[in-house]
Length: 177
Image (tube, rainbow, N blue to C red):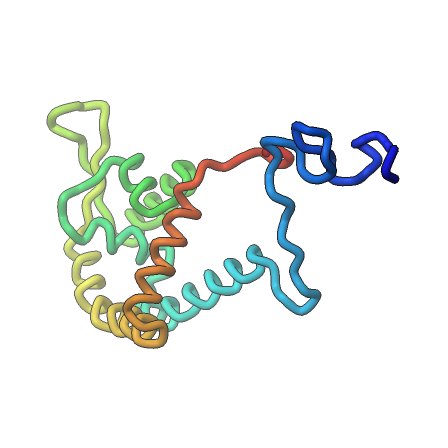
C-alpha cells in the first residue's frame, strides 16, 4: 500500500503525507475489551444505584427522589424562580414546572408573586416541606457519608470534579469533532 493514495492507506495522513491521523483530527477512540463496560453503561448504573440508595431513605416518608432534589435546594428558605430551581436541580424547565405542580398539590412547596416583579413567581418550601427535610436530612447525610467513606476523601473529590467537568462540558451533536 506504499504507493496507495492517503485515503486508502487507512487513518488519513498528516500534513507531510505520512500515514496516520490528519492534522487537527481527533484522537481515535480507545479500544475497550469485550468485558469492559462502556462509560455510558457505568454512568447509568451509578445513577441508578445512587437514586435507589436515596429512595431507600426518603421513600418511606412518602417523598420521591425528584421531590427531595427540590426540597433540598429550597430548604435554605431563600425562594427561587422556576428557572433558578431548574438550574440548581439540573432539571429541564418543563419537567421542573410539572414537578412543582405536584409538590404544591402535596403541600411541600408554595408559589408566591415576586413583590419586585409581579410577572415573576417565586417558589418557597412550605412548613410541611421543611419538616420533611428536617426529618430526612440525617438519613440522607448518613448515606452520603457511606459513599464518601467507601471512596475515601481524595477519590470522592476526584469523582465529584470529574463528574462536574463531564456535566459542564458543552454537548456536541453526533459526528461533530
